Image 1 (cartoon, one colour):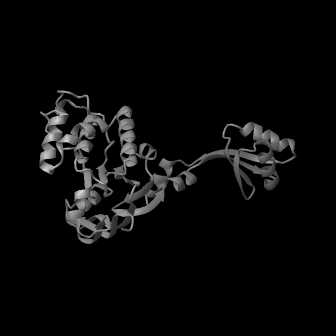
Image 2: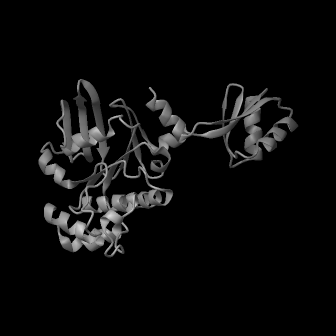
Image 3: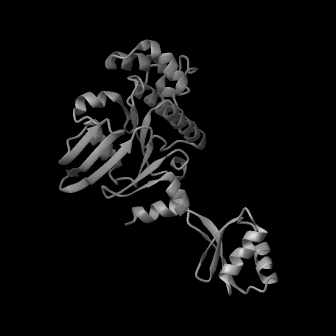
Length: 297
């Protein structure tokens, strides 16, 4: 076992001569929360359908849990692709019982799973009366019936209100702590950034970049730029005045990342030491800027 739950090489699928997934090669490690980020129509759903065997690839390879026997390996996967197909006239428990019979799963585990996804107190309420968030959580509960090692979730927070998004986000973290690897597709960047460990940015069917959360945080920063007459002296002055602050130098620029609310005090300190300050400006390059730049290429 190489530690990867999913590996693809040159995975490709076209419709009417147009590639929906175009030469995708990824390697996703056990225990990760992998965010597949892209616009609508970028290829996210098609990629997941290929992994699940819901459509045929044109070319390429898929390996699951280090195994090329995909039929056997897919038994370890749970999924929610688009909106779950529920029995709308049945309760959450009745839905779970029906799907447990279809999957050959242990019905005794249903109460535990419903409690895990926050649906243990819905009583006799029918699924057709559920909010979108409740239906999504029930869909995930059904996907958990076979005790999967990996979950594929396609746009699970799309259309949810802020409370529903937080509930779903907390559920992702809980499942991951229980050892489940998650692959989550979305175009909602800010919310996924709170749970994802690795991002795969997909555009026009291609993975244009993979980036870990910590690297993304390093790239996406806000700061204050001071153009000065003596940058090294300015940096020394800053570090003396703000010993826990964070800064770097670039040419004639002192770039301060923290504290961000002290521009006036920093400027006063530099001027008091005879260091000329020619320009002060702020900059912001956030996560959304980064993804939009990548998805426009």
